[in-house]
Image (cartoon, rainbow, N blue to C red):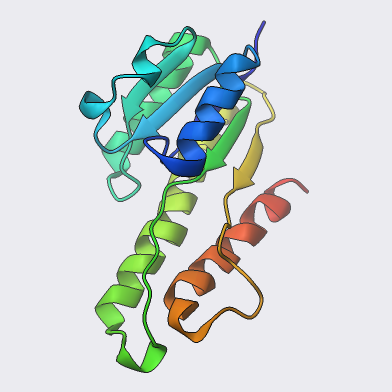
Length: 163
């Protein structure tokens, strides 16, 4: 039986490329995005399920996990890729923008991971968790501090879950 990867943020960039890569390698792919109705290419690929997932919408997260398991029977790997970058000098960045950055890039990652973990608890399966921390560096550029801080937090989550 083929392995299944679920990818958040698969509408473009790293997420989309990863979905195409794993599909080409024979994996089942649950490619999630906020607006799946706009997707025209991934929907044509064999063994790819394109479905809605907004990391700020718990119901859409649960629905995406349920749809992926209903279609492929399991989720072996979760790639938390969804997120966005807020740039600006810390002293000029409003708290609301920083909170939104953390809500999307950290809390959203936790919510998606939690949903997959819950689904797997009843299946006695082990899932591998990956976080995309692209752009996260121990010391980033000052205009990227609002993006780098949550991305660094995300880079540690998969390591902790794998223990």
